Length: 192
Length: 184
Image (cartoon, rainbow over all chains, first blue to last red; front, side):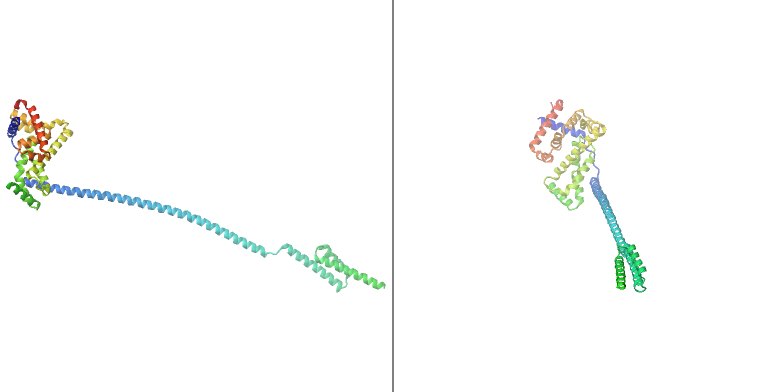
């Protein structure tokens, strides 16, 4: 009962409100136009989204590449620095070795040069020997060839006096002794 | 039955790319959809935008329509969804731009009140219908104004028959309470 009343009231209220405004005649065409527009908008949105994604990807890859390149450059710079350091160390070592070698060669040269020099003491000794020999030789000639016994003894004594440690001083002593022995024998012969 | 078969053929033709079939569908159902939208939105009169939206959705989705229900039911379902979206957008618009309260949803279309409702009694009735919550208003409009069967109404609203009966009962109770002096 109430349902019928309500239904009637609603029906009458709807009737008095009037129907909707008449729709345009080309409704289907308008709908198709809107559908086409929507398709275009969807397409544009998709293309734009794809473009944005591509752009973002490109930007990202460019940035990533840049970062990678920068890292690679940094790594290479570090390697170059290390190589420089190693090269410097090696050069220093080579320089030190060359210096050492040069010093060694110089030392060898100096040693060779030093070795080429004769010993001055020996030279003096040789000269002393030579002088002593010459004095003894002259004394011998005085005694044997010129028969100058006194002069010869003086010469032998000079050798003994000047070069007492030399072997020619010993020879001079022997000669003096021989001369004195000879004089003694001669004087004994004369007495006999 | 013949009409149903006719529209099945139209859907089939449209699926094959014949766009004149769509013209015939629009021609055949636009009036019903306009009336339904007009009633669901509180008799604003001008519902062409909503009708266009409904047919636009139908144009896009018609190729996927499998004829499991009638084309009319399917279009009515779309209409209900579009009307919900429309009202929801209007509520949001009012809330954000005019600082009006949510209760303004009951007076969404003042033109309808001023121009079309001359009779105070029916004015009250229409206001009472508009004041109903959506889940009660839709069954009332479909069942009592569109005069659809219980089965079809339940199918369009995607609810069970029992749920529909409960909603109708509660809607009647509210209307009876709001329109006591008219119903008695």
